[in-house]
Image (cartoon, rainbow, N blue to C red; front, side, top):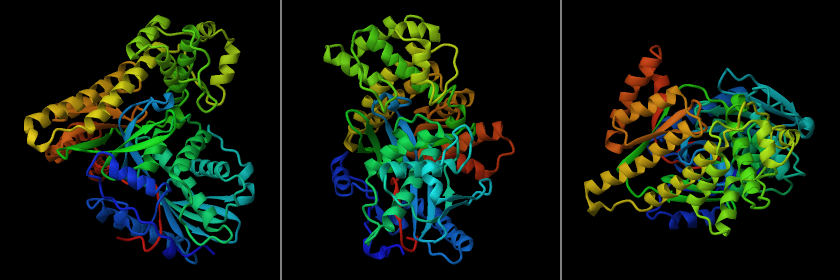
Length: 537
């Protein structure tokens, strides 16, 4: 039987630090593992608690009805994320600035059945029950071309075997509840994979011989790195931002996530309480697992191949390889830096090497790399197939370089907000300066990276017209959501304006509940956790 959870609870409060980094750094140093907590008040903010209490009570009741003779052992959770700045640069190993959000994926688990199966049920009736024999799990193949909801859990299984090669996965009877809209740009798939991997590893550790505790099931870093690899089994060549935000999230803080030279997540407290971020979902589904060959995965290939071409054409030598896939633009920047070339110089090199703004065919790419078309296809386009006519190396590389600079500037501004005594004018100028970075990011995503769409551009325009200081797409793009910077005292009014001018005009039959799910004032939330106990405050 699983160990008793009462003796093993590690609590993590949602108290925000008063300084940008120091107190939270101490907390992370003290709690490097995914926390095991006992009350919802340690998971959610005061404003989110009432609705979450009702939701969790409903989940527990549904679990008991579904599995009437089985105790609920634990609930694994991982949240979605909103990326404030730094789009499509994580897989080039540049810093990003996301934050975890309240919306999350919950997996309620009973461990210890004797049927030798993993049983998956979902609170959403659109996702039918699935059963897998544990004996088959090591050899099971995931068909990434089939859009099957249980594949995300199986991706977590793959990650568990990678993290714990000799793991003996016990029987698990699960009920899954996800509140992150799919295809919304808020990383529902990454949250699902993270929660699945966390649930499996927790179950393995709980059933291990001589185990007396749920604590120390997995470190946050291991969960992130294994989840990044796991999600590739469902066809996405992920860079790691989504998983990092979901796992490392800290209440009251954004996260400066660094991938070079090693994974590091630094919480940054919001030094001003005068502003808020509003997430607005276009309701255009942007599923990168479906459209990856022409959108997300193609951009990963374009940036990696652009880096390799720059290295060859500029005599930089071999680049460090990211996860066995290819070089990165970050690798190019570091190689140039060692030669005394600054960021402006690197951008000039990009424009010089990629002089054809119309793009490059596969044959032209092969000529630049000094490789055959077959070699390039095998290396970059086999595991994650792509479809294209011309690679847009120049535009993609310029976006990555410029966006990386915007992240650094945004992070610096967050930690140097005007003091109260500086007055209202100083705060106004501060918010406008932050907003200008967001606006430039959206323009770059639209014009250089070509990952916006009509609905995103419309929402961004309406946001600014209705009082937002700045607005931009967030997530992979091609649909999904926007994030807008607004004054906190105007946020509720802003939400009503977008409901009227976007949702009711584009979707006149939309219900109030669906609108409330589509647009919300968000706040930074706790990352992944295992919850045990009475599942209440």
